[in-house]
Length: 492
Ligand SMILES: *[C@@H]1O[C@H](CO)[C@@H](O)[C@H](O)[C@H]1NC(C)=O
Ligand SMILES: *[C@@H]1O[C@H](CO)[C@@H](O)[C@H](O)[C@H]1NC(C)=O
Ligand SMILES: *[C@@H]1O[C@H](CO)[C@@H](O)[C@H](O)[C@H]1NC(C)=O
Ligand SMILES: *[C@@H]1O[C@H](CO)[C@@H](O)[C@H](O)[C@H]1NC(C)=O
Ligand SMILES: *[C@@H]1O[C@H](CO)[C@@H](O)[C@H](O)[C@H]1NC(C)=O
Ligand SMILES: *[C@@H]1O[C@H](CO)[C@@H](O)[C@H](O)[C@H]1NC(C)=O
Ligand SMILES: *[C@@H]1O[C@H](CO)[C@@H](O)[C@H](O)[C@H]1NC(C)=O
Ligand SMILES: *[C@@H]1O[C@H](CO)[C@@H](O)[C@H](O)[C@H]1NC(C)=O
Ligand SMILES: *[C@@H]1O[C@H](CO)[C@@H](O)[C@H](O)[C@H]1NC(C)=O
Ligand SMILES: *[C@@H]1O[C@H](CO)[C@@H](O)[C@H](O)[C@H]1NC(C)=O
Image (cartoon, rainbow, N blue to C red):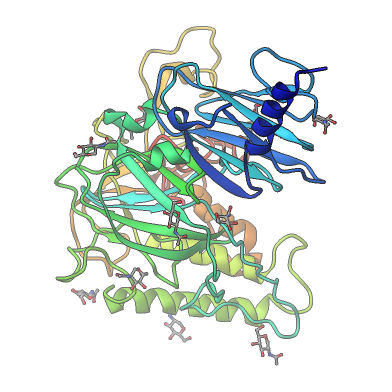
């Protein structure tokens, strides 16, 4: 038998252990921990996930131990029945299990850090999200960035006989979600590395200085993937590589992504928030926006540009619906809605040419001269070293020796005659923007893309997304852009 006094002491320690709440976050500090440094976990019939996030950059980290066996009152590095350590990775840790009289104990090991503990019955409160923020485009001092998507719209396929497609002027008729997730944007120059140096947690990243100012934040449905928060950032520095994160609810981290601002002489303004071209969020060769505006949107875009595009789209939709969208579908895989959507994406991408610029790090990394009309194959590779004999001929085998170039082409005339004449460097549309119209639309429309074997490379970025022989996703880089800030071609 234990002496009575000791029993009382033990009981009082247990009774007074601070209780954590379910579906809540506790903000704590190793220097103000209770004694003993432990917390009781509420009993629950279902599994609970305990998550931990460090909020301070420190060389020494505390350790976190859990016990879900009622016999172990003081879990710790000494081990014991039902004792588990929550392993930390980049400042995050989590453990999921059944709890009845559970205890969480902190061994601070001399570390002086603040941290958070989350208890949840529906997955970890603290985590790194799989989805990344989306990079729209930049000018010398502005950027358009998007949160990961949420609230995916349900777009029912149109059915016979009431075959209604979105009107030309409005690609989506969905109303914005009433309670969107709470995303905050954090960014800083990559070179200052203050973000990368610490724990990759919501509380640490949110506590760091963020660059630029958010000139506008709005909900936007770019594409079928779902609604996003759209941020227009201003006050950035030219020719600078930035690191950005989107943090949901202060605890879930999306990112990092990297992107570069353009040089100070970059001539093109941003265009965004067009209901008829929801995917447009890039720099377009237009004069500076009217006084009082920093970007173009529907309120200030030249009307001749809008009206021409809407006429094309209306005529296309009329032709499509009068011929193809009856009871007999022209394909088991795609319908008229898909065709109209892909045509709209292509029309928007080619009507609103995208301005680009070779990256600061490799100013010569662009194709330089237009491909001749008869040029064949991929124009995206530049040999850095002569091929090593016996290494095989395909681009993938030689990747170590070759640099992938963006589909940048200097322009002196505009493909869209409504755009004003100006000198700029165009980031060509990806050929896939065209081939997806080809795939989604009925053959009688006779929509034709240039072929890879002939003149495609003169007006499209070829071989980045799909392979040279058209294999989907088998191209040099398998996408139009990546999280490191490379933009290879314009997908629209
Ligand atoms: C503790 O958690 C483990 C793993 O989830 C589980 O197998 C065990 O039954 C739990 N013990 C108690 C007492 O709930
Ligand atoms: C939970 O922790 C494990 C390691 O213990 C880690 O592999 C996993 O990614 C974590 N899950 C989340 C959502 O953070
Ligand atoms: C056809 O569908 C549209 C949109 O779904 C709806 O607004 C319209 O009332 C329908 N018309 C008829 C005749 O059912
Ligand atoms: C944020 O910036 C201010 C002023 O430049 C500086 O004093 C402060 O130390 C910075 N904070 C962090 C966390 O970098
Ligand atoms: C965000 O936090 C609030 C309150 O802390 C919570 O009610 C909500 O469910 C959380 N949202 C998400 C998406 O986790
Ligand atoms: C969003 O989250 C941040 C950080 O957790 C918080 O400061 C802010 O009040 C929240 N905003 C809303 C509208 O919930
Ligand atoms: C932000 O952008 C949206 C979309 O273009 C627009 O409707 C809204 O008026 C803008 N808000 C401000 C404060 O400029
Ligand atoms: C659209 O159709 C109208 C009427 O058929 C025609 O007058 C006009 O030229 C067409 N516009 C375009 C851009 O094809
Ligand atoms: C389109 O409108 C702009 C300004 O409203 C004008 O400067 C331009 O000349 C017009 N372009 C054409 C081809 O009419
Ligand atoms: C930005 O910095 C990251 C990390 O150093 C690097 O991987 C990336 O290539 C850079 N991006 C650009 C566009 O310079």
